Length: 150
Image 1 (tube, rainbow, N blue to C red):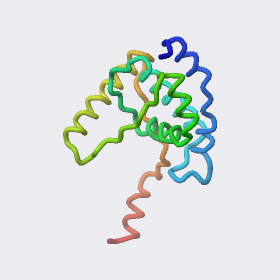
Image 2: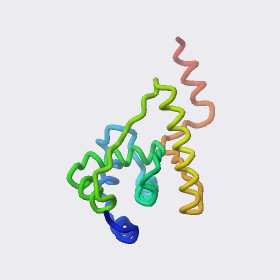
Image 3: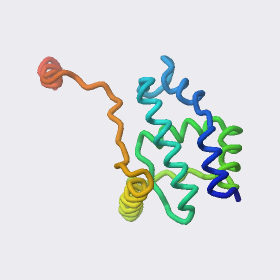
């Protein structure tokens, strides 16, 4: 198990540019990330990893943006496995939630609140929720709805 100092040094030098490049690429299958927001997403993801390192007995829940970054990291299985070994001394599994399970959703809400609290405590700022999706100009949605009656 790496020490906190070793994990911090590893995170500081961890290069995730290959993930940002993929998420900003034209062929990315989900809504494409802007480069500046991908940089912020990387910072948030690394901070989430730090919280997982520092609070290994807590069940922490990421934001959707952090989760998307995490999913993309996991897809690079060899690198993800190496990074997990270096940071945690073991593989970190991703456990998706079940939206049809009320108890699961209640637990996730509590765990997300804990994540927000620890993030604030650790980094001195609120956990950011990125607004990545392009917003339509005011009134556009009404015009689209009016021009496409159901």
